[in-house]
Amino acid sequence: MSFKDLPIMQDKKKGVLLFYPYVSKKTPINIKKKLSGRWLGQGPMVDKFENDFKKKFARKYSVIATGSGTDSLHLAYILAGLKKGDEVITTIFTCTATNIPMLYMDLKIKFADIERDTMNISIDSVKKLITRKTKAIVCVHYGGLPCNMDALQKICKQKRIILIEDAAHALGAKYRKKPIGSISDFSTFSFQAIKHFTTGDGGMLTIKDKQLEDKAKRIRWFGIDRKKKQQGIWKNDVHEIGYKYQMTDLSATMGCDALRDFNKIYKHRKKIYNTYLQELSPNSRVRCIHDYDKKKEHGAWLFTIAVNNKDFVQKKLREHSIETNQVHFRNDRYSIFKKFVKGKKFPNMDYLENKYLVLPLHHKVTVQTAKYISKLINKYAK
Image 1: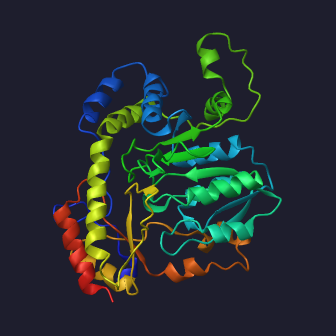
Image 2: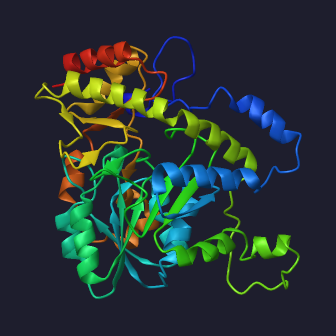
Image 3: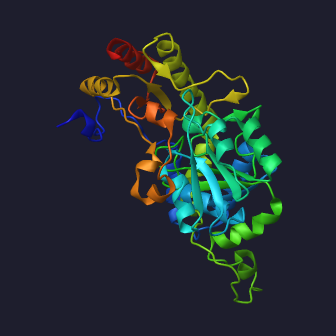
């Protein structure tokens, strides 16, 4: 077997897995209670989860819980008023979930290159892509490191362009002391299994314009006004296309439990992140994907390194039962996006494509383990 085709490691006592889902210890008891009650689908726990999330991360913004982070992104693009043929600038390096909803809507995707130091969207690349037809910019805070929001907001204000943040990596992150989720027109989050915490699957959308909240709630659920329906005054008409994008009370129960633990989760992840940074950054053969911009507070979802002999380092770590991977991959390599990248060049992505590697970072990784992993990387990196 080639080391380029390493399978997912099995969950066993020996070894360090790349990801491990966080579920509160209270959740099994609370889910059991929910299973004996009336509300299993969208009900009062969804409202509670939205309110709790809003207080912690969204401040005065409207908050909409969804079935997945991808659902949230699609809703954001719809609520932003994007139409067939509109140009949207987005990053070449992200989970496909960021960009696939644009295909649903027949938008014209314009891929921007990334920064070498952060793997976030390149501001210089964005500026070169803007035309009169540009309607939105979508940025991804890779690994939890906020993008250059000052520059992006300045561009969007000058050009009257909508800014949408894919913050799936960035729960807990801040920019100029403001929580990610309380800055731009729209921000989306994910509670998929490997994120900071999981609701089984799920997402959240924050919206700056409160006038869009009712519409968001309608199109989240088939275009139906659920509040009017439950009050018995719904006239049985649907006047806009909706989707089945709602969160369930079961998922929301998991979310509420995890939110109560979030400070503990985040503190631990930051400790592991900073351990890697401390142990690896002095090594000139290892580039930590990180910047030291004091305006930014990292969300500590991923810790990523870049080394010239990435495949060899990954192989040696696996020999020590340590799982690593690239996690995300450049979107221009996928057939579904081919028509948007013909003749386009992405030099920074090209430079990093075969160098970056994501290290284990979750609640089961200890400081001692992070130091051990770092020691091995420092030994094998060339």
